[in-house]
Length: 223
Image (tube, rainbow, N blue to C red; front, side, top):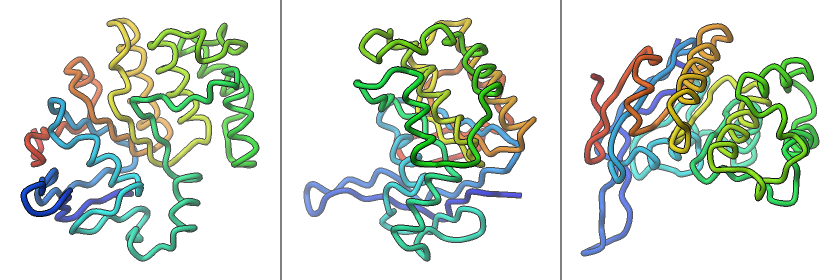
């Protein structure tokens, strides 16, 4: 069953001579229990697609539906609650708070979302799987780019969302870590029945995907 759908979505920025159409008639469905990979070069519209899918941007045209209800029919407060409880984000900029240790990044989630997060043993297992268990006392400034990326992935998975949206989650990772993250995303989809959507230019993730789509010049096609 599709838990996230985009139907005939267009996205236009600017007007007149500055008008740029970034997405063209994009339709997409993410199934629970599947890992969907959207592959394309920089500037192809992948990040805009993900921002719209997550309800952070209202498309110029088209309908985005999550759990059977269109974003457009939800209030701003209801959208915010949906992003808090149902959708996890892994963004390129990491968005780790610089004044919090790795451990405190998760404690902050507990303050915002008080129930339904991973148990302490489950979080410990996730940190170990990502190779960051020994970093819990570190601040973001003390981490490498790859370490920050893995912490961001763990933080996105901690609230146990039904949908995970990831923007270039392996961009800062070497080959062995790509394998770990690819396997983790696939297992998350298959064993926990979650819809995982990844936008990337990293061809190394293709073997882990259940469905692969190509994004070229704002147009999406299944491979």
